[in-house]
Image (cartoon, rainbow, N blue to C red; front, side, top):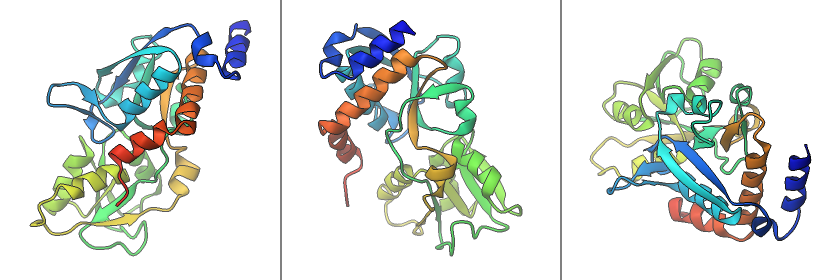
Length: 250
């Protein structure tokens, strides 16, 4: 408690980054989710999430490293101390909060449906095949709220689901907007056009609080540093620079 009180005091001062002791932070991620995290040609982990984390680390006197790990086992690495934090486009959901703690959200945009024909409403999908990335909050959302007579088809990645949609193996895909937008921007124009149907903000209001950085339950030291670092990069404009780099306004 004394340590937590000291950290809270330091974070309330303008010299917090200099006053805090330097620490090593090992991040786990799944580098298969462009543009949030991916591998460059020289096999380095990069992406929006990585740049945000690095900016936070720079503000809060943390030396940070990143390693690739399978998505479905990411959160399991935290209780055993294999990694200190996970950043991987993770929605902050009530189910995940039972297992880990999260930083404040650094990204809040509802996912979207995409199909070859416009959907009349967010869930006019009765009797249809809906593709989604497996083991994600998007899949859990569909399981709870999609029409009972629809069919949820899990894929290894959102890209795989979108390719299946182009080949007309399924009727729609439910995925994060920026992932869909990036996929569509790279199409050659010879494919049948895909149409985005935005979901209501209910997704981030009732189901997810946006993307957050996960830490081990009770690791308030690191969680507070992450929150303060995020606050600082928003205030000094670094967050906007990174956001505009990956998601330029069209």
